[in-house]
Image (tube, rainbow, N blue to C red; front, side, top):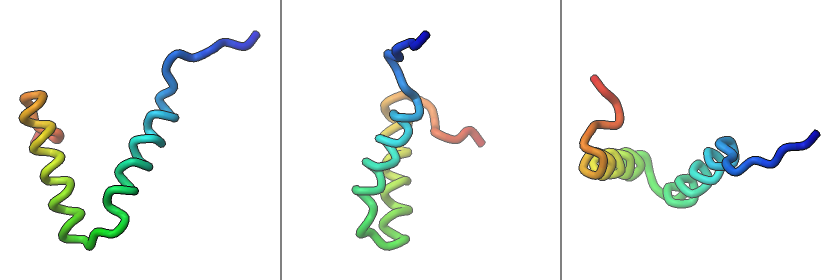
Length: 54
């Protein structure tokens, strides 16, 4: 019996990873750090909590 999935988390993870990789592929390490710092701030402002709780 084969079931169909409405949501595939592995596919979603791979799609997100590929999207981020295409955005940062030509950046140097300082630009990559700034990219993730900016994305973290965007997440915090959108959801009201930090990405990593310290």
